[in-house]
Length: 129
Ligand SMILES: [Cu+2]
Image (cartoon, rainbow, N blue to C red; front, side):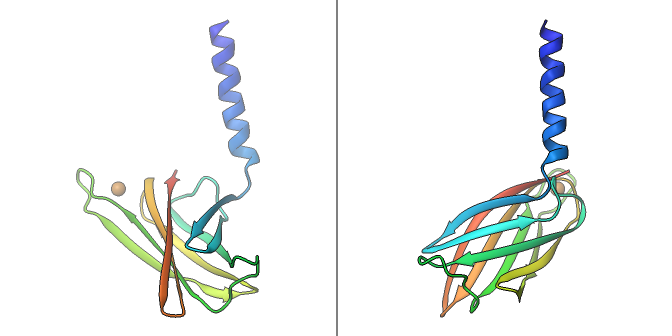
């Protein structure tokens, strides 16, 4: 009985990974709402596309900001800390760019939005497979 349960869980997990097409996360940065979409789920070593949509309190897309993503992995045994950043380009009311992960494991992601001399940011983490 226990075996069947474990097997069912594994099947559900596998199915979940296959069904989930792209990764999407919603965050707040000050007054702004930020939706980050990644084209690969799970994220993979190498290039991953990112699309960031920023909306103001009224729900209107913000298109006059500079948006970049900083992504980093703290030092681990045999590996120094790694820090990268990617400036995103405005395209059809959202900001698009690519992240290039150099290894698997947990990465810290910071989305920075510079607008009118103010910088707002939001953080989350991504597990690269
Ligand atoms: Cu590492």
